[in-house]
Image 1 (cartoon, rainbow, N blue to C red):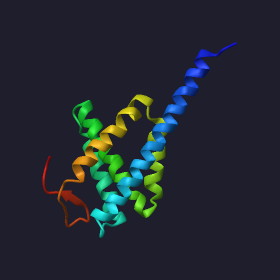
Image 2: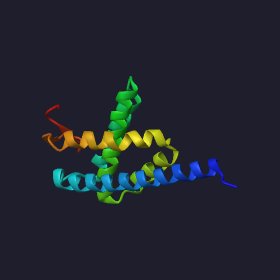
Image 3: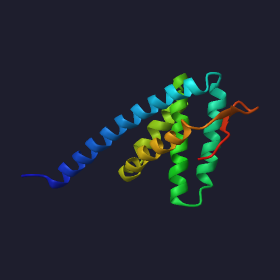
Image 4: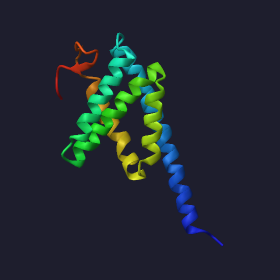
Length: 137
């Protein structure tokens, strides 16, 4: 007998795997951008930036703000790939494993939109080893 529920679950799993592959490709692209844009960045500075992005995520006042800040977190996690950060990989794996499919579906376009903006920005290194943009879009 045909198992409708089992089939649906399998389809959702296949979709999630496709989205995870696309996310990994986007994070690799961010890694390359990070290396080119911030050649003197450090692992410590990137981890500090990750903490800053988490603070912004937890203080978000709307779902739209949360979505943008979640994209920022993943952008920093993409940057952490240049150091093959175990912490960064663990966070990515844990977050996407627990992430509902609907959130994952929204995440990738949010990251791409934010990266389109980031690629046009001018960046300066601050005294604490983090980089901040000097212009808003």
